[in-house]
Length: 155
Image 1: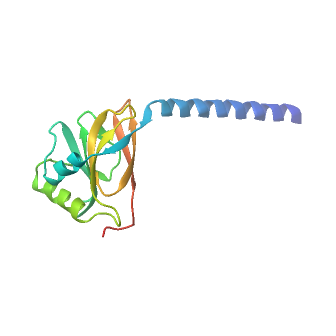
Image 2: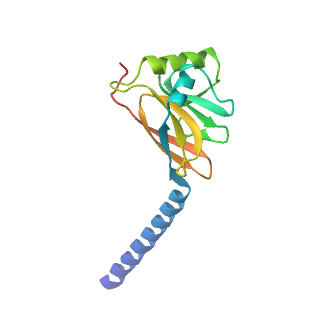
Image 3: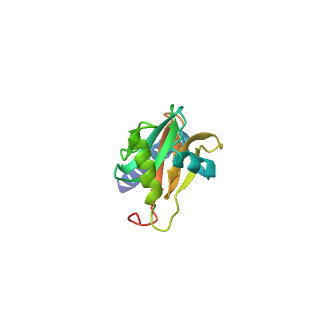
């Protein structure tokens, strides 16, 4: 009797693991690791309040304490409620860029960078003093950004 229970538990465990592994593989197959390529022109464009009209722009954190701004090709979206969409060229846009530049994270200079998918294709721009990890869901064209804060507050 116990032998049958033991083998049915093992079979159930194998089936559960197989289902779990297949779901994980399916989930991972649509996501890819992206990255940043630091570029002085991107930083200068943000500093001069120049923007690409083919991008949608977002800032992270509160309007009076932003830590980053991004621009993404219009067919991409950002996956995080902390990123708020902003109209490029607006007074608010200019103010947020000024705050990101003027109040960098502790011990980190503000920089500009291209946001890339794994094949090196540019899908956007990034402006901040915080490092970031990039993941892109190829199916939904959703970008996830994981911020690496240099400290728990701005200078």
